[in-house]
Image 1: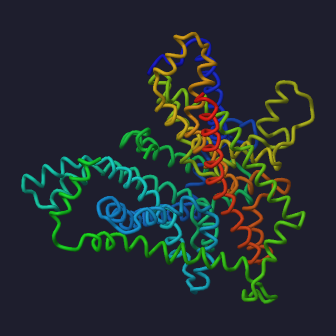
Image 2: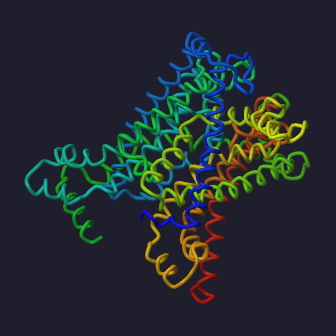
Image 3: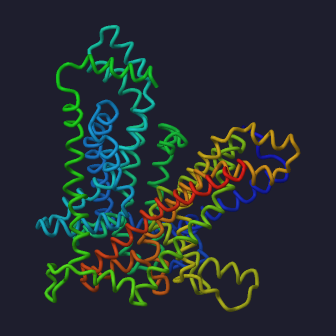
Length: 267
Length: 307
């Protein structure tokens, strides 16, 4: 494959791609650069170097609370999506269920439906049901948007399972549960791990669901960040953004180490 | 296919405990029940709201009416928002595809290191919150001289008047291209990677210049990935809220922001539901329509002598 981008054309493609990567990185670099600025307003160019904005953010009670809310919410939503999604994906792959295509489409619907509208429909429904506990409502909403990611990655990795190994184990006398646990599961673990990591990041970064369902006490981090942006204009916003970005970058590195990015993104 | 089908039946025959389809349904039940209660039912109710009448006190009830849809299509103010949404989504999809091609080609055909680094840099922003990225664009496009773009322009000696990009449709397009670029690059590079390299080599050996081999071989064969990317970018841009809200301002009012205003400012649930239905319709139309258009074109090309 290497060398298919050679000569003048290859040079142009590399140059344009590099310029596009600058465009990709620019807003993130600007945010990080301003988070170290000594100026009192988040304006360009940054002045000097200080980490005091980070100290201020980390010491901020509300920020820490929002961070904990978001992490808890993301963990709970991911775990629940795992419990609901893995059996569903397994059933679709292994059993002749009537209407399997329709069911699979339904399981993936939250990916196709605009999230803003999923959240609005849920808000109106929960209000009609008199469900006023924002923490529970947020949890339900976040499971809704994370579930399809697990279904999709697990379905994709189940399709790649080599059935002849299971066949061999069964022929050699292993009971079905043992075949499942020792032969099937190890083959789909990377897919499940990738799905869980996606689900966690989707929930952790979610705005359109939390936006409808959060209340004054249960404020996830993206909502807190967005609200702060309309009230605060100093570089502490940039510091908060950088801390959130750091979480994302750690997740990407984790994904690359765990399953390889190319594989994770193709499932 | 036959072999794997045999394996499946074989394995199934060794599961005597429960009737097989019942076991499958039991495993599916929790997920389906959850989605039915919290997604299907609420969506249907919302669809119902869009054709019901809202009284002065805020209660929603009969009679049935298409008044909300009528206002959305006929009132110039609302129609402008619909047109802005379609325009911004179209431009975003177009510009994203132009920027995505070189990146996808480096990922699919580049040297291993370049390919890997490009892949990481393209995917990394995907896990950075849209709020952070839109904030970055607020800082970059700022309308005064403290915005990065204007600061650079002034440093280059471009005159005293700062360019006004922030809080226009163009700001939404720029930021949306940035937000959705990975979703175009990924299907495109997958599509490019599946093209048989010998086709390109054959064209080059037969004397076609590189640009021509690209236009006649690589580009047509990558259309499936391009279609997938265009569809997803168009739908997501048309349905987005955060980016238009943060960088669009009043001049770049899109359906998502209008929807939020109807709920939180106007308290008009019927109108909000109608907007939601239109947004879903746009997303569905993009998926179905673009696929149909692509099929038509492929058929046409084959009819004209298999070019």
